[in-house]
Image 1 (cartoon, helix red, strand yellow):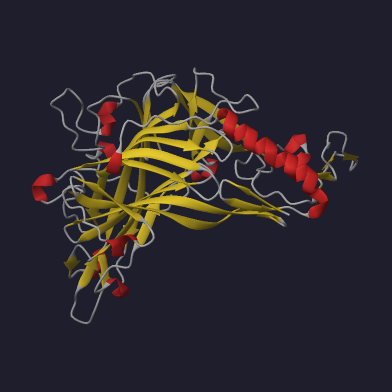
Image 2 (cartoon, rainbow, N blue to C red):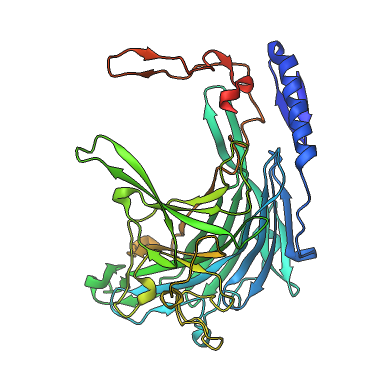
Length: 447
């Protein structure tokens, strides 16, 4: 038996057909009874509104700026069964800093306009061949943004329980000096967001001292090693109001014998900067506080950032106060746009370390500044063109929904047993396992 919902085909085993039909009716009712339109402030080329094959939907605006290039605005996400909720008020690349191992002065490819910088000023015009199976969006008549939907592999899989996922990809390209940047914003059907940058182009500096890089040929040409730091600025706007977020820091603390690990959650009350700490799995979530928006279980909606790529950490020279930590949390200020080389004519500091001045970020409009680094030791294979290398991170919904928002799309007829806990004496306690041998779609304990 087959049913079609919003363009999706769901196959249901005959024995489960009556229950499946009831499930589909409930999904349809839930979707139509609570879904509402998201009132984006933009129209035309500036508007991106895409429904993914699962029925999940993203809507956002974008604009092109000389320094940051493509800036994402008013990003909202809708689950397949739910309604739109705001996620980001604004998101952008707030700096790209290139530091050379031989001590050559750093280059700042977002803000150093005088020396050829600026992602927007150096953005590529795209042709249909640059955006196969996608749509081109223009700014001032110049097609600079490719928007496409792509499969992303399994959204989840457990035996017969599975779903293939998709993502919305926003792509722009810019070349500053000899470095070419492929800039992606990947928006997943489960609500996750992955900003990333692919670095390619030509090696930016050739020297002769192998202690600062790697030999490229037999003519004493050395590719000078360099570190690229990408800084993203994320201004969250969870639910309907962007002025009531708080930051919680998560750490997983080991016991003295390292046999158990306990979660510690601390609210950051005032503007601060923090470093990654792999030993305690340090991460952060941005939580909606005072609007009262929760999931079906009554937990506050939030987004979570877990640093996954921490091997190439860069802190820069002692004079680079803006590079000493990995993440900064500040209260929103209109003139705070760039991690460094920020305009000071409106009274703002020159860099992000100066933005931190003791203001509260508890139940406020919070801005997150996050840094990802990559140290590039050149190889012979980087000529005549540098092989592309991707760097980025993921922010994922936490308690946005009470269960996996994609799991209701294709539930098979199968039995599911919860593993029982054994007590210290070896006895099995299954008194609370109400879903043992229950069909997964109809087990209230599981969603």
